[in-house]
Amino acid sequence: MAEHEVPSLIRLVEIAVSDAITRAVPEVAGADPVVRRSEHADFQSNAALGLAKRTRTRPAELATTVAESLNADPGSSVADASISGPGFLNLTLAEPALWRQVIARLASPRLGVGSPEQGRRTVVDYSGPNIAKEMHVGHLRTTIIGDCLVRVLGFLGADVIRQNHLGDWGTQFGMLIQYLDEHPDARWHHDQLGASTSTVSALDDLYRAARAAFDADPAFAERARARVVALQAGDPDTIACWKEIVAESKFAFWEIYRRLGVLLEPEDSDGESFYNSMLPDVVDELAADGIAVESHGALVMFSEEVTGPDGNPVTLMVRKQDGGYGYDTTDLATIRYRIRDLKADRILYVVDSRQSLHFRLVFEAARRAGWLTDGIEATHVSYGTVLGPDGRPFKTRSGGTVKLMELLDAAVDQAKASVSEKTQELTPEDLTQIAEQAGIGAVKYADLSTSRTKDYVFDVDRMVSFNGNTGVYLQYAHTRICSILRKAGNAEIDVDPALPLHPTERALILAADAFADVLAEVGRDLEPHRLCGQLYELAKAFTDFYEACPVLAAPGPVRANRIALCQLSARTLRQGLTLLGIAAPERM
Ligand code: ARG
Image: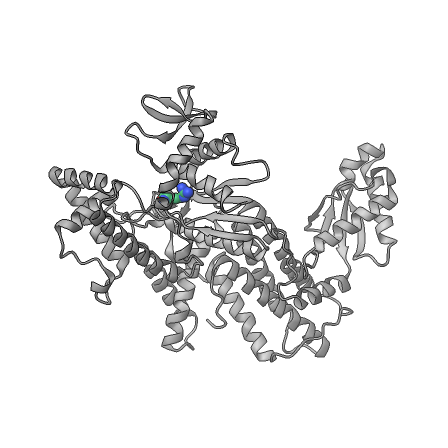
């Protein structure tokens, strides 16, 4: 167990019930206590229903024996066990045990969260926009989800390696380099731009212009193709221009990353071109092992696991007919590098669900080649499409790709309107800053709170609402608690575990306590929406508590205990928002 880990309440109950089963019914010692949250009590145990068969008793009888054993133990954290239905055990925690939990979590800088991912080397592949193509709304999802996973896994102790698999190689460069060659006065470089134009949009414009020329003018298209050949052959002028475009695109991507506040750094970029020199060797290795075989002049892997609609095995392209390498080959080199050189224990690919077949085949190849062994996990963390308000893939009115910066601007504008409606006390500078935090937070939260594999509708109005399961609601809940704590002064609090609990206080403690287990679950199952759900439940529980229980006006010891509940709620919300990559301002 790591330094500051505080076992969760549900864990304490599991231990108590498990001990009681062992004492009362030794034949089934060590059985799973099957403890869940309950509507009728704090928790319930459903163990008796399954165990009764083994002990040849009725479930209610068995449950009664276990309940008697639990109730006979005065030191237990369970104050009351009672039978309900055919043999459920309703379990109510002792009030001092709940208060002691508050004390223990507050005493820990990490709120008693353990480190279940300790030392696990985890490569997270996310963002991966394509240079010389536009960064589109799909890249927003991988960037946001990937950033959240990096934060959560890192917090849980994993040794995280961020990998931005930039699409920095490929045929699209021919078109751009040729266009720049023929239009030396094109303004695309960030030094040439006025303050009003961002590098992102200058590059988008350049891409559009080159694309238009390519589509309209066959002679240009021909010259662009010749450029691709020159690039692959390493022609110095062409390479120099390629490097400049890559550098400029990175500059542009980082405008977006900085605005989003994601952890990616330039040195996390190992783009497709990084693997170029490894490709021939990877191909040779797969051919020597008989995994890649000749087919119509190309080298392919025939899948042993996946068949296509025609009943034939699906193929993975290892080397094209013309001897060239593509996206598939690069990913083969990439997975080998991550296992052999980066020594990954776990590799996560946060990529659009439309690439799921691609990753199945890459993982199969890696297993067959002996790179991906049983102790190593490779997972495609797939996600659904971003839809527009009309329920179709998100496009501008003219059908073009939506510019990311414009999308973020729209969210921030809406957030500004929302926030200024709610409070009039902010200075214009504060309002601008808070609107930025709320708008960006809203976009991220909307993305993270939907189950990852589902499509989701990008609806700015709903995202910035102060009501419902939104980022703004959580940020606002946090600011309200901060304001109570400011008024309370920053004194150290002594919690008295002997005080009785109001039902809303009890519910709040249980809601806050779930944080640690939910984080561990996110680390395992890679589903950030669970963390969003837990924080939302916590914020609601706080609202109920605050409506029912005065804090600052309460008498001495009650006041202290309630301030402690405010502290625990605020710190849990703040830590949770931080792990989602969302700012937690103190005023709003
Ligand atoms: N550049 C790719 C795209 O935009 C994503 C890269 C994902 N990572 C990988 N190893 N293939 O679709």
